[in-house]
Image (cartoon, rainbow, N blue to C red):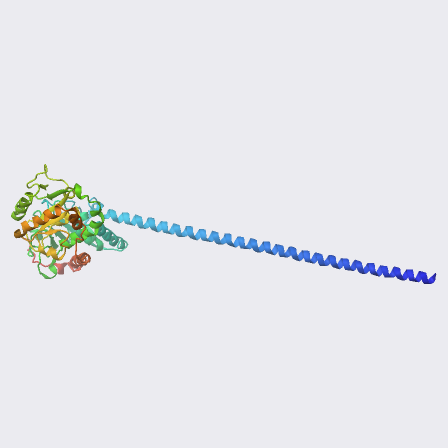
Length: 438
């Protein structure tokens, strides 16, 4: 019995120990499982935090990019508006100058809008093309913020169609100086029309500059400086203005782009002639000879056959295949607006005048007549071109000038001559002997 009891007690004790061990094992498993679960939860949260952090970083970056883009666009728009306003302001400088009242040194008020009484020719301002205007405007804008030296100027005795806002000398001056129109000027710039310039040295004690593009030489006993078309050597007192380069190169920059493309040869009439001065025998003779082939429409006041003088010369010429462009006289250096008007209107010029244009112009772009001995030969050439549309189209599309770079070089020389006059000491700049006033 005792052995049986001891064995039972032993087995019971064993069971207790075993159960205790089992309980401890279960507790250990529970703890391990909870630890693993906790680590998994932590890992899951870490992943979520990383994803959210990435998303937040992307959003912040997008916001920064948008702010930078908007700032850049605002600055660009501001600069564009600023530049546009500045451009518009400067474009109106010349167009408004005739309407603005300008004060002189003594607060005198004067402005010369139109001073002249003259004649039909020399609409030199026609030759100022868009490109030239843009170049001038760029220079004006560059100098807008700079303080310019004031100069007091009077313009007088120019051609009937004279407009100050389109006058090349004035445009050159306002690039560098603050030009004030005055009746008490330091500089008088005058032409050959009217009569005020005669004896003007007694009226204005100032520096004088004479300018003409007509076949007339300057009188250096009555002017300090002169600009003309003749080949004259007189030191720094004279500048030969290359009217042919000024006109034709400027026109060439526009001509092949705007004029030729839309030409309909079938709709064009034969030949035009716009003349008011009948005292040019060679020109009249050529007109008569060419008129025997076909009628030449005369749109000027001389020998008019179109019902009266035309109002707009260029519009009139645009309807014709050819245009007679004979100068009033044949003089070296004298090339009027007749040749450039013909090119600008999209016609083929028939030119007689200064033979030096042969060095400047492509002789396949126009018909050059040297003298009366060539009249019949050139008329036969005109007939041939008139009767062959292919020949005409090839000629009308030819490049006009030989050297495109000549014009800017000559313009710079022109500016340098004018600036040299103004930049000198006023007393030293005077060149002719003044008459003492009584």
